[in-house]
Image (cartoon, rainbow over all chains, first blue to last red; front, side, top):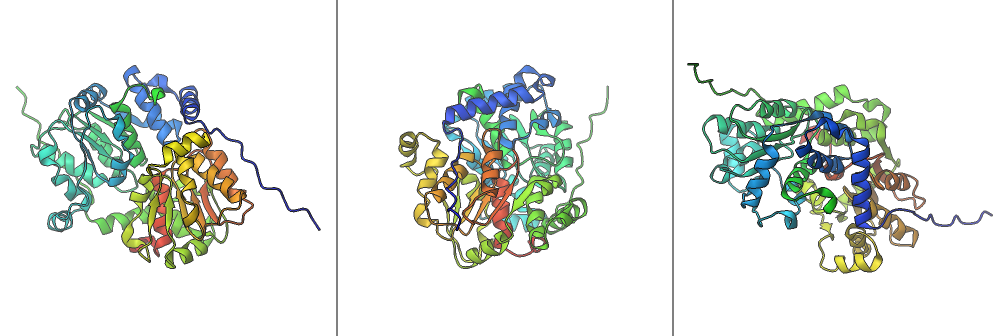
Length: 219
Length: 219
């Protein structure tokens, strides 16, 4: 007869401040932050922290004004518009500098009918409902390529311009293309995006969180 | 004087059914699904779809009973316990087979004081509040390694066993270790996890969505 195995003992860091500190130290040690301009490095640290992948650094694309423009807009009380609830729930409300509204229109009761009428996805149709809030807003897209494409189409049609678009749609159909179109946008709308298929709500929310507050190590 | 540039015209797939179909076709074409047992392949397709990365296939770890056990539990009305709101909001409620409760205790008012008393993170303290709902539940962890470690500690101390743990914490401190501890759990609790630093709410929610419904192509 064998002895019953004793239960395992788990040795891990419990202190939230130490976890943050160690995480950001590892990211700064391992990631090639030096290829980014100084103003983008702390934002990149937070993005890497959110996804666990240091190699996203080389896929980031941005306009030089995006950090300053998004920070100024948020400080002035700009709303944050998101394509999915997951992004909205990833935004740390207490970090927002002006109790900014966070708005996701995807589950608005008007959306399914609009999507059918427009012949598009619910995510794209929901963007129609952003129009009145779009001027000077910070847009964070973490899921749907069609939402980003629809927004770009709206801008081409003369919609009001947001202060910044944080574009992180994910996936195999349209995500890389929508983010490339964002990088090439001729509307002079500031942007931050991640080229390719990778993306997601956690990255979109992390971008907002990074731009809403100061240095991530101060969390 | 140059002509003003005409606005760009975006050519992309608008039809949600076609987007799903093409996405899953690309995943099935590119991903090495053949290294997985048949019962896990459609779950893996949905996980890959959620993160845009075909190479997660080789980092998946699971117990042979996890798909059957989670499906049976959900069909029988088991609650889904999540570590963060983002996971809860990524779960497609209409896919749940029995109007299952989706419970996130992170923002319970008791949690901050408990975290301070236990000397741990809020995410880990929130797991204490799962105890009465844990027997037969489906656990989906998409953010905090400490939540997963705390759950394993509870199981070692004799807490009721969940039907399955879907473990996708992410990041640089403790995530890989917590997921390895889950894979090595001596409590015979069925599990599905992703080795290494990658993970996140989208993957945890996608795992629930895949196990809650049938074939992902039927979305």
